[in-house]
Image (cartoon, rainbow, N blue to C red; front, side, top):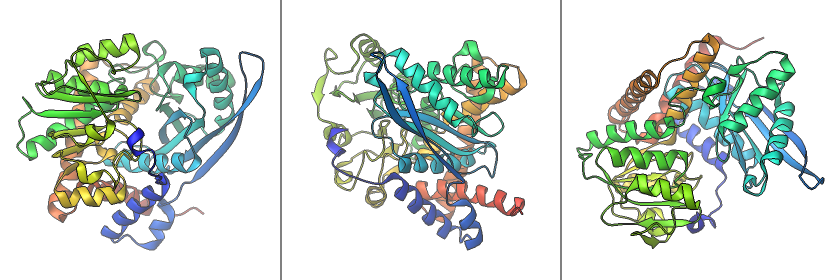
Length: 420
């Protein structure tokens, strides 16, 4: 967001710092730290693409497998101008702990291409995607590494990856990616899963703090798949969403926004900005609103030491990956803010990706009610697991979640041993 763009924070340095804090709290032995702290594999690929005008443009792509201790690597692919190898390494690292926190049998992976997808045609995106899929093909597969959508990637892009992989194999391989269209082996409920996970964990935090859902106030930074659907779920549950934002600006209404109407407005206009009956506010004002719940659902480093002091929310629900820097974390902790960390809060997406993979591998599909019920069960259990460490060990929720995730990966590492 514009208000925080000037703050430079290396996401991978943050990921390593959070690992060290958890490892120290667990008194993890050095041998195990050496085996689980760093990525197992990093691949950088050149992605030349023939553009619509005939010119060939070279993009750079990445795929990082942080850990396969507990199962195949799992993680999204993002298309964004700011993608770097360090960012992808950080996201792969967080995916390892995230999968362990919700106790699904995956390790962490991530991918990305440094590009501006908004300036590319569908044909250009398809050619770039297929070229990238071909380049990372030796690393991916349903038993090795399973990509998924992330920032500015879609079910259609996953379909192109699945098709490219299948053509190389000579037979259809549905389980090579998740987040696919339903017609190609996608799971019902996948599109809403990240937001539902955010809703279930936030509901748990509200119960812990004795904040009633009906009439609770919410602000949402980012109005994409995670933020927009989360806003809708809170609205349906009786909470008042006072503000929301996207890359073009922020809107606010002290009476509460009509979220279904905002979603329709964005569908038509491409932005929440200009929604009738709402005021325009600055991004920093949204973060400083007096609300019960603040949901950062955009990109990393939205809340920093420069703006954390202005945050007045009782609960911060990290629907995005890494939206709060370590220094801001410490400031919010001192203020008594109840923070639901990203590796717990937004783990609904990877959980239903796991369900999709299971369905693809078994050629047996579930209805949406089954998917949502299984998701709720896992998210509630995982929230309670983290909450127990938070209360028993008297550590904040981020450290508690990292201790749970790192501890489970460390256990797997000890049991597997070292080959050769």
